Image (tube, protein in one colour):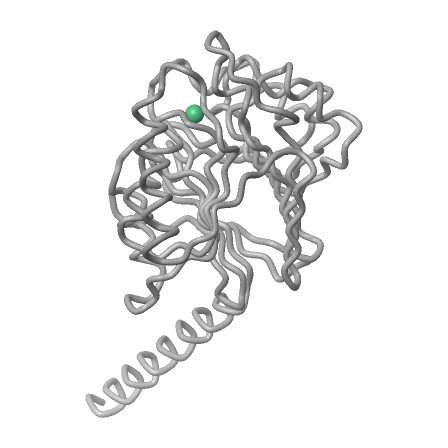
Length: 290
Ligand SMILES: [Zn+2]
């Protein structure tokens, strides 16, 4: 009897190992987008099946995102293909300092400008990029509306900002980069912290996306009915901290629900990963450490 129980146990362990490694291998061949739980802020990690990696924003903590990334990429992989900074607000920018310190970056994409009043941050950022360009031969790529990047099955289409003016009264959110990213037939729209005014400029563009990164942490000043209808997302991700700034706004949540999108929030679900084979996609929640 003991012997049978032992054999059954071994069989179960073997089956478990096989199914886990199958799952792991299967997911390894998929495109993935991870919305890190960074509290108030945005930090997004993108990886193609060919292991090309892009990071959009880094959250407010200097080291948190770099440490989360180290949990999902192998320890020997110290190179990231592109870092994208949507705008200069701390809750998007700070963590990229930690990422650039820890990894070799091939391309740094940003608008090249920031509002007055953030000179110190801007000059630290510029210094860091300059060092990355000199020491690691990174490319600094200044982007705005019209920039397109196509790499195998991946395309990035930058839709905003149109132009950036140095206007000291201007809110830096208005200069946020907006990018529509498609992996084959699965499309994402990343909106930084834009508000109604910028959304209006986007109407008429191809905004269709399966997954929308809701702008400005679900603020009441963004996600208009017209904009949401143009995007018509199936999934709306809100990257937000617990109990702060009134984000996300209940009216915004209602407008998103009205277009039939499933809302998922980092403050409730933690780190959120969306896997896609280029046609179908699924969501996995996994804790990547705090
Ligand atoms: Zn923000």
